[in-house]
Every structure is written in C-alpha cells, then in structure tokens.
Length: 119
Length: 110
Image 1: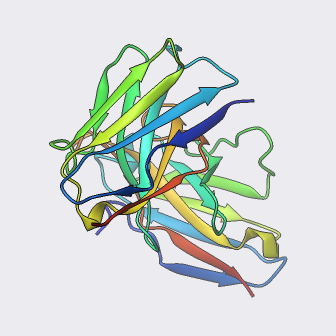
Image 2: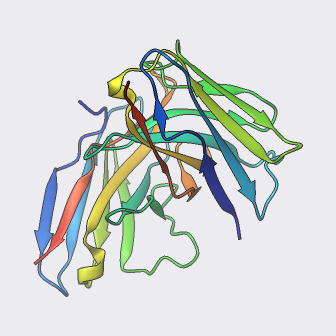
C-alpha cells in the first residue's frame, strides 16, 4: 500500500525558504502513470494546489505561487521536495504531499505537516 | 475567491440523501475530469470520486458523482454521522494551466 510522509521544519522565519520533503514508500515514484503534488491548507481554510511534478522532472505550478516555488524529484531516493522562497505569515499552513493521478485527482495523501511562518 | 463554487454548508438527517454542487466554467469542469475528496476533521483529504463519476476501490456506493455542462454534483445517500466532513471538488483548469479546488462544503448530519 502506498504511503507518503512529509518531513521538514515546522517553523520558518519570514523571508526565508520553506523546504519540505515527501518520502514515498510502497510504490515507485519513477512511474509514467502518475504525477506527484503538493497542496496546502491554511488554518481553517480550504485546499490550495501548489504544484505537481512528473517522474521525468516536468513541473506544473500554481500561477499565483510560481515565482517562489520549486518542486524537484529524486527517483533514487523515492522522494520529491518543495521549496517556497521568501515566505510570509500568509504561507502558514498544513502542507500535504500527494500522488496526483492526472493533474488534479489526488488518490493518495500524506498526513500533512504544519508549517508556521514566524520570527 | 475559489475558481470552483461550492455551497459553504449542507445538512441533512441520518439516513437521508444530500447533494453538493460544484460550479465552474468551460475551461475547467465542462472539459476536464472532476474529482471529489472528503476531509474528516484533523485528517488528510481522501479521494471519493474521480473521472467525474468513478469510485476508488473501497469507497461505498453511497457516494456518487455526476456532471452536466459546467456543474458537477456529489451525492451521498444513507447519511451517517461518520459522513460529517468537509468535501472538496477539484479539476484541471485549461486556461489557468492549474489545478483548481472548490472552497469546500461542510456537511452536517443532524
């Protein structure tokens, strides 16, 4: 059974870079059948797609975050990662990684990790 | 303001049926597959419906999806207290080149 686990700092200072890793187990990330995505949810609010990456490294980003986001993939470690630059308090959220069946259909999710932006 | 519009809340009694709408446009709902996810309190979302009307393995047939034009609908029959959750629709938007979600609908089973 596929399992995804987010890891990274729970506290990031304003204007610094938020960095998270998603480790996938129970299946290969090196599959042409899926994308791998990051989604966030500010406290008490709805879901916001950050971006998705294909096993080949092709990336798709939310236009509203594109200038600050980089998603990369490491097939040798079965991991993909998120970097969000120049964060502000508005970036405080639970960050989820997920398998993306077809750019928008997330069929397996990590448990999520709360990242707080504060000095 | 979400690209996809959902009612903020719906409610119904146990055993009854409820529908949740998701309204979009020709660049998203009308021409791309819609998915529905359930988020129980304090947990990650769970896929309920994909490709407009298909259920992943393990999802009971009490949950159904449909689509007509620029609107999609999630139906839940035989409501249970355990169905109390937030429900989100999502799809690809061809104009934005982005995944878009509805704002979410909170289901209360009275």
